Image 1 (spheres, rainbow, N blue to C red):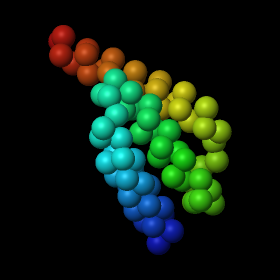
Image 2 (image 1 turned 180 degrees about the vertical axis):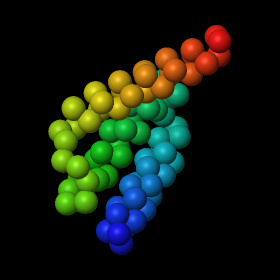
Image 3 (image 1 turned 90 degrees about the horizontal axis):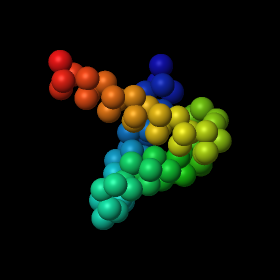
Image 4 (image 1 turned 90 degrees about the vertical axis):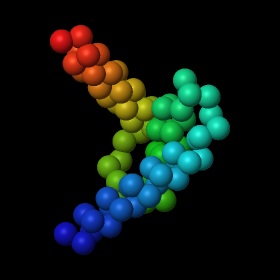
Length: 78
């Protein structure tokens, strides 16, 4: 249980670091930059994080974003 909590804390911390480091990035490039930076920041913690190649991870995150945007647009129409 402790390892799970520690992993989540590190994951959120790295997400916050990536968020603040990319605030000056143009808004249309932020998602890709933040996702890539988060992945790069997890490299030293490979035992704690699922091992997935960066290209595969970024493709997955982009598809997830598109799915979320699609669901949100459907909610606005209905």
